[in-house]
Length: 486
Image 1 (cartoon, one colour):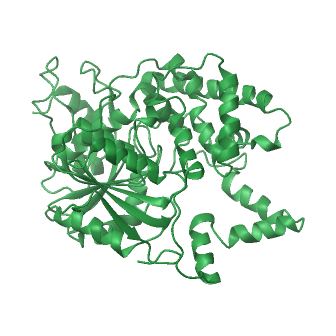
Image 2 (cartoon, rainbow, N blue to C red):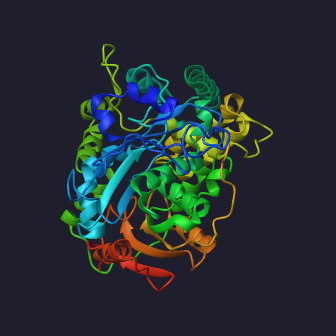
Image 3 (spheres, rainbow, N blue to C red):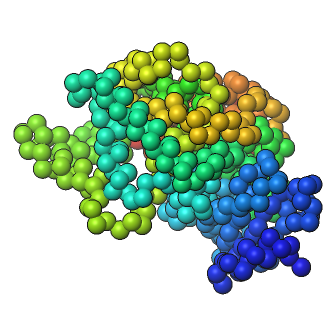
């Protein structure tokens, strides 16, 4: 017989959810009547095509009975009703705030083919508070209000008559939005740190019935992967981290923003062996800047015509006043500062307050003119996070060199505008040769997926499919297209 808590929950599930639900509750010695260790499932089909995990909101306090529902999408290579594959590749696309479920719908089959030759399943998931997971960490009542806030919050410094006056306004708005989140969601904001994400998806691994984690993590997902590897070192199977961050930097004040400066102050330059044709250049610009659409907008602006630019702005940011309140975005913009600030909650604060942030903003936008204002908008709210959610529990502050069951495969592009090669090399040195190998991917764009290399793909496939890590600490691979030649 199911325990009372689960029986009540089961009564509220739809008929479809009842067929695919799994309730994962780590054993609590203070609540032994709920479930036997290590976790229970009710009900769970023998070979679920997909399942809906329910997890404790606060995994550090087993007396807290609140549950959250994680959204997952599982692409099972043999189809529904068939046996699951030997391994399941858990895919975490980026973030914070990006939907893994949406990415599996878009790229699931490609991931299975590229990394396992069609042998493994793939699963995407939305962490606590993100997209289809419940509760959703959203505090704008409608996306049209978020639009207005984004337009206000991301003005360029050079267009402002008084940057400091503007900064006081934006800072007050940041405080107000966190206050709104606290009023709507209470202490939920304490449980969205990277460490909590890690604990949740280890429960998902258990639900899959797999002894090791098999994963493909991109960008912010690499911070999740680094943390997981060192919190659950005996569960690391085949884990690829592409577009590496260095999670220790995210513990520092504004670290999530200033690490991106490394790519403009210390770039890695590749060798161009032959002249690049116009068509090759346009192809590369299209992958980086949505060329030629952006080129046409710039051309028209120089000619004094702002219609295309205005249409582009309206299509991307504007919601009419009677817009459908249903959330259309698959990235929770509100979630980004919540995660970033939880991860750096204990960083020392500057004595001169907002004046320090003004200097940091000026430095950031001067050196990182393309994305400096966006990076700054993610970290400024951290000035107020601790007012509403002091001391988030269980934030990992340990080392990154714990001995792993298997080495992790790191990948970093030489011309990545968001996660520079410097970070991956710092991470590899910290983890050590026993625990990591690094692919230096000579290509443009964010992660190796932006500028494909047969060499990189082959190393990834041998590692993911066969469990064979490269012998060398660094493997150098060149993108297939010019100016990089394989």
